[in-house]
Image 1 (cartoon, rainbow, N blue to C red):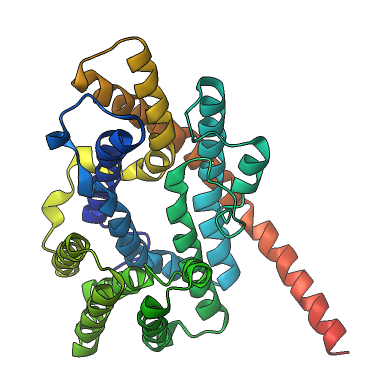
Image 2 (tube, rainbow, N blue to C red):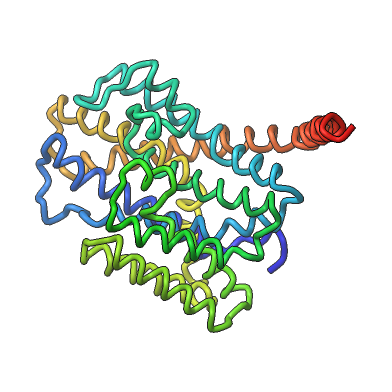
Length: 344
């Protein structure tokens, strides 16, 4: 694979994952919080597993970043510019809308919103401005591990280190230490690891060891996930990624799905609480039509995510990444001065 190439089917899967989570929140989850007039038969109960699909996707595409960077600091900077500006924008928008219109049981204080800007608020026992933000911490932990491997030039040993990581996950499935589980991503880490292996299979590394590691990751799911449906869904995800790895899902790269994939990050960050506010306001206006109650927040959040992606995400990333050569130069000087102090 050449540098800079995108896999269209991955963007399509990202779009499908985002919409699965959206439908889950607007049907089954909203019913649990505030009640719903729509018939429960239409609830998209298992759409929440779209997040697990995101995690496998993250493991797969992380090498697209690794291939492009020259140093671990550039890797960290690229991840920062990809995640944080859009996240800050979406958090501020969500906090503002919820503060103005209200959302029973879900309002946060200005202090909680400020802490939320760090993206590690869960570790600080601070509530999320939007409950969907919980999934960002597992992503950060994974990127942190990749940074360490890059820094110590051990990316080629990723199978060994991540296999030990998964072993710790299996052991912890019996201990169930909450804070440790969160801070070291001991519930979802095997999905990220599996994604990295699927990437290597796609790029031609089809040795038996890679298939064995995929099996190892799946077996760890059996230990950690006690939900039978969850295991079945993740089995489907692994099957899908095997098809991706052997280039058999290219037909998914349809324009509507590619569009949803493009805006998926902003859509994921914006949709939940803002969507709940919209549904609540429609109900206050005595809107009874179930289709309108669901379609209106979907349409609004898709349009809002489109704007956020094309304006906020695109331009912030361009501006910040153009600044990297200057930052890199200053960082090099700082590290050089520190070495001269420690080695006079």
